[in-house]
Length: 79
Length: 232
Image (cartoon, rainbow over all chains, first blue to last red; front, side, top):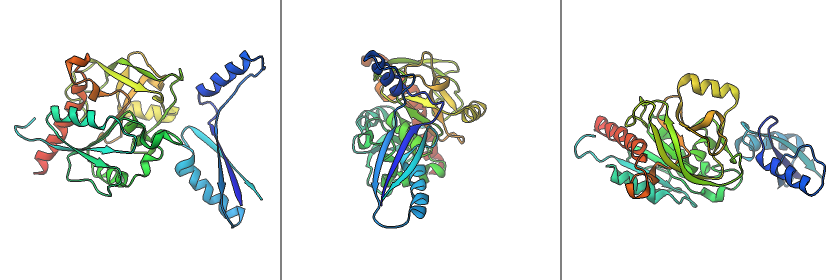
């Protein structure tokens, strides 16, 4: 089983990296109203069921992969 | 400081720390014995205070300070802090303390996205603390910063709490990084753990332009000496 975790700057939190990306895209002629930059973490989990893996990964996100004060996260499974 | 009482202070060395020796040198000049302690140590030696120095621990992977918090020695630092021990985090050390949740809030990339390396002016908000006792109320200190991720963040609720409890000890006169409420240094609620982005250890010799760093580090050494004396 594979899991992908998306970590994003929380809504309302200033994202200077996203702003820089947006302004660069604009310079290239792309019309973008907003850009936010986050992080992708791909995990290989071996066996098990998605239900218990989700609970486990939520703990992993809270404890390490995201900083809950400033970041939100989403967990998705493949296979 | 009491005569002849040289308190021993641990300076933690993580892989990627680079201000550990500067911190040790500054502490020794101010009357402490500095003991460099490798991150893999499970215990602290007998010390009256702990400094987490600046640098790029574990390459700043994931988030600054996020991996260093799991170093074996951090469990000992956590226990030391919980027992009321004096802990000072400078720059990356401040980031580690926030990630370890020994200090409130988080440090994010500078709003400018630029690494800033220059002297900044800092207003001392309180002098009745273990880390600012040598300063005078309202004094403005000149101490350098050098960081890419020093933008302090606290949500509204936390910020109100910090202000109400007087946990903000140092504030930038002009913020170099976009920190909320211009916060440069913040203490925990009980006042024994303090973190700041500026580098007091780089401002202890007139040759380098300012000695204002001695007011912060000297206060810390005084407090450490006091504790050693009380414990003895």
